[in-house]
Length: 332
Image (cartoon, rainbow, N blue to C red):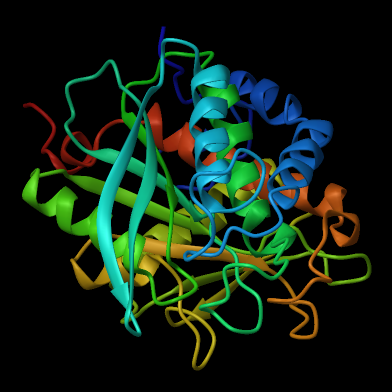
């Protein structure tokens, strides 16, 4: 059965003067939150690092090095954690960048919803990595935090939500060529538009592993104005996070990303879809895109909290009334 939102009433404090209902945590969602495995997250990041590089222009045929080996492993891991509940597919597209041509493959894993609402929830992360030179497909680029952490989050959340039935469809997307300019997400969005996919929310996880000593909060990027659908999605994440993870403050930031940088969510926003980015509270430019970005630097207790924030957000969305149902007038 789909999960249902739980509320407290009667003797409990009322925060809405016209309602006797107070939002509260759902015990079934809490049980999923508590099942997030730090050991799994560490293992996923270590495995992704072990491919040496996941550069867009790296080896595609080898079994243990390069982006080809990495994407085949991600595909098989989605199949393993989802059993027969996840529909896992490659999404191919051609890319030409600075005179170099390559065939790229996004990976989608779809968990169909049981309800009638056609809208989907998208959870995304890019799986490519890079060294200092973004065309260098041979040098080591472990990309543990950037962005093995995001892919590990997808796999762990897919494992947990695949154990239940949800009203709304959830789509997990591992994207490529983000380091060169969000080409994988652009292709996904174009295909979604052609397929008339209704995307109710899209959450991008990029660099969420953290390191020892950084502030115990998470940055949440959303583009304005204040009434935009991206900002509304950000408020929802902040609110749900406050209910389930009150010790993880959310820092709301106005904008797609940091100055001069980008993230895959920008392609969704450009197409009119509600999309935001989650990111660790403080980054270290000396580690990014270097051999130093290894699994051993990640703070896995911190990392686990951001994974839990994603999980409780999409779980509440997927078992809540559809946006259309919420907006519909009550019967006489």
